[in-house]
Length: 346
Ligand SMILES: NC(=O)c1ccc[n+]([C@@H]2O[C@H](COP(=O)([O-])OP(=O)(O)OC[C@H]3O[C@@H](n4cnc5c(N)ncnc54)[C@H](O)[C@@H]3O)[C@@H](O)[C@H]2O)c1
Image 1 (cartoon, rainbow, N blue to C red):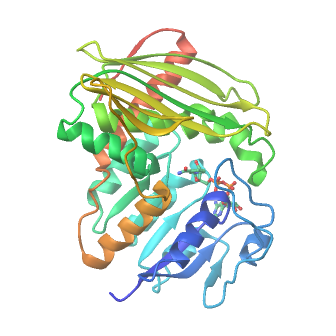
Image 2 (image 1 turned 135 degrees about the vertical axis):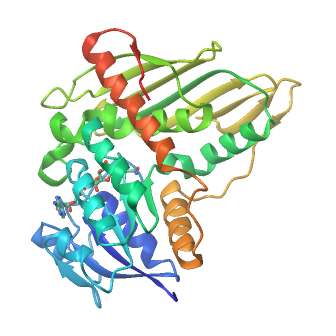
Image 3 (image 1 turned 90 degrees about the vertical axis):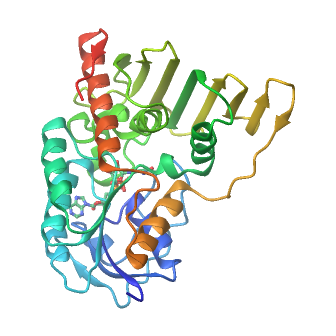
């Protein structure tokens, strides 16, 4: 196919980010858009805001040549759509992904996979039956510094991981999104499912399945028991110390932070205030050069390339690896609620 024809569902923070990325991709064309919000259907994204990489949303988007729908399910049946890109709130992911698979479309859906383990199990069946490619927006896997860390680690460059810590601290996003849905723990799953899941997902991607997790957490800004601050220890058989922390409870004026420190046998790799650096045990300090882009750009361009070239999109993910990480995130929620270590059934 000359250009991949994309139907985008949801034009909030993530949808408008995807919109810009696809627009800049010569191999993609946005042919359809769906949103329940009438303003978004006119391209008015002036109310859109997020916690990282905010663009200037004051000007309306140019929707010339784009068929506009209110319902994502109608968009899915548009014959001029090859790839359905789902950027709606988490509780609507599963049904839209399943419908797009049933309509034999390529599917890219934002993370998290879905809201709970029951939905994940339904999705697993649907993804196994899919005729076309399905990827999920676990963008940290494709984020240049994280991708570098994982790739070099798997090559053996750093030796074994001895201890690792990952942090994702966001300003509060209370009141910034459609129906303030992120602050409703029942809908978003709080920072634990929505944001911290990126680090859990990356840990499982890089280090494999932990046996168990111990987590503590609490609500700060959310309703309905959404966990706004979580700290998790991931238990591995070989004693590797792995810990991650996620929080979106601080005032909206605080900066966003995503950082890690990974201590390995031969070197310590840090993405921290000083930048992205490798501190070799022999005293050398290296600043690896990585592409100045985001994981959102990398994952979406890659998925479109795979469709265009008919290549299975398994560079950053397989569904099973995403499902494993989702099960770990679900165990973290249980660990917070029960106040004890939880063994994970895969
Ligand atoms: N990968 C990342 O780094 C990242 C970052 C932020 C959000 N996300 C994920 O992206 C998804 C969307 O988050 P967001 O920040 O864009 O939210 P948002 O509230 O900014 O936007 C949601 C949009 O979906 C529309 N919408 C709501 N229900 C709909 C429906 N049933 N059908 C069609 N449109 C509907 C709303 O009108 C709004 O325009 C969430 O699952 C979130 O977890 C991912």
